Length: 285
Image (cartoon, rainbow, N blue to C red; front, side, top):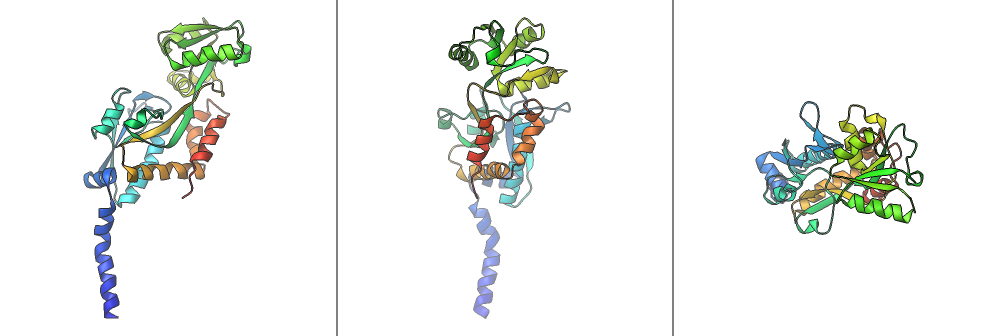
């Protein structure tokens, strides 16, 4: 009996130190510092942007808040969240230089970028789409014969749009612009019939206007852009925490609440590839 008591006491005594020793990499760093640093883009609605009070918000920010909660559960302590603004050019370097712990935004997962960082489960899928004014009846590629479609020059969307026109034998004029702002200005002045960009970018453009519901965004896409969060390379334990959260959001369908909050009011019909993403990334526990 005495021997069993000694064993029990040893287990209780060693439990906390062993749990602490199990933490590695970013999780260990968060435990020691008491904070987690979330990298985000300040003007990429609806994924990540600043609200009217200057606080980071958006679809990706909501997902990262769930990840923070799971990190706290994992390390057994509360953490302070520090939001760190990053640029498109410097976002991966910020991870490598240990200035942020997770890149939470609208980053497309690619194999070449996987040489620099590791990616979580997919968080969103988008692709090139078309936006028209609400009172414009030409709302799909089949109805754009003789119409003008604007797009920013030297972009992958411009290439995809021209390819779509060829493949569908649509006799539309592709009008090139230097910026999305120039294209939207032309759309509002009815100099063009539609403007093309990544669907999620079009939603962001609409959100920035005073009357977002004056725009109609085609629910279909004609290219493919898979989004994911980025973490430091070879940090499997931290990535697994994020993956567990994302998979749970998919299995529970809580992701649909977040989708409806930020995107559903513009795109009533979810993309089939978005639903496919949910099913493929709802990894069982």
